[in-house]
Amino acid sequence: MKNVLPNKILAWYDNHQRDLPWRRYRGFQDRIYKVLVSEFMLQQTQVKTVIPFFNKFLKAFPNLKKLSKANLNKVYKLWQGLGYYSRAKNLLNTAKIVQSQHKGILPADFETLKSFPGIGDYTASAIMAIAFNKDFIGVDGNVERFVARLFGYKNNKKNFKNSILLKLKEIKSEDNFSKFAQALMEMGALICTPQNPRCNICPLKQNCISFKKKDFDYKIINKKKVNIKKYYLLYALEKNKILFFNNKNKLLQDFANLPLISYKKNLFDMNFKKNSFHFEGEPKIIKKNFVHNISNIKMLIKIVFFKRIKKINDNQFYWIDYNKIDNSLLSSFSKKFIELVKTKKIKYV
Image 1 (tube, one colour):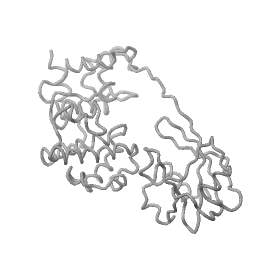
Image 2 (cartoon, helix red, strand yellow):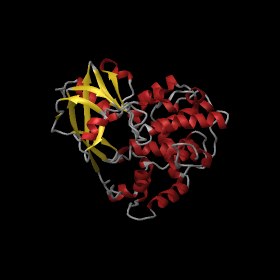
Image 3 (cartoon, one colour):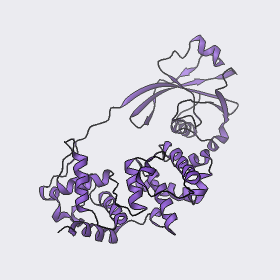
Image 4 (spheres, helix red, strand yellow):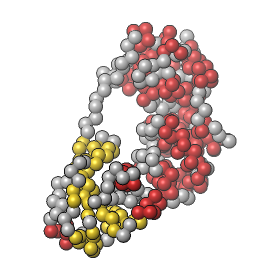
């Protein structure tokens, strides 16, 4: 029967849904705002990681109007530790656009949502379904895995994603789109897990082809190629101040960065000495690499200690007081390095 599967899914969700802060709201606009913020935060990040960040963020910015007036550095500061900072910037810019161009009301229109910074097909679909109860389903990894296993689909064909969407259209709830979209995500997160799915408590195990075949491998894993990049990290401590650098890279330009120089460049060439800063003695290079990963990039960083900086000629370099470093918005690799220094796992020589 057509309603058997969605009814089982919705009944399970009613009894087992998690109590998440973005599912608690005081009215329609509060619901929409909380869904918007949570969907940005949940991009490439697990629920358990997001919860404390979401709660702190909502205390600082309880509604879209207040967020739209926020300073980017404050938004970044609240986001610090959550990673993928472009999401924070896109969320702030989206709030500003909604406030200025849509009278502070997030539009219930798929194409308009997609026109906002950081909102693609999935996020727009999730917002349309969860916030506005519209006939959409956001297909994240949890939903894809759940549906693929349920119908025994293998991800070895070009039309795999389209097959998932077509099957979802067949089994979707006829009216309760918000609850159904969340229920699918919840089934994937709590029961149909990537490893060791909890089939014994799944309400659909009798309908599940993968359960009948005892074959839960649906995905052909294509490992992302890891790009290895090598750098020198210039570390100088002068009168309890640490040397930093204004990085023009789009991903790092809003943050305080320890100076990085491509490993391909000659660290000790005359141009570098003359044009950047003068120092006493020869810098000491630590042979062991300091490793930092960003997405599919593996950064191998050799630390270069400078004993004393005599003069800085380049205004892109600046000092930050070591005791006030926590007040600065550090890039992830800079923060990681400073933590190692503070815990004396890396010692200044």
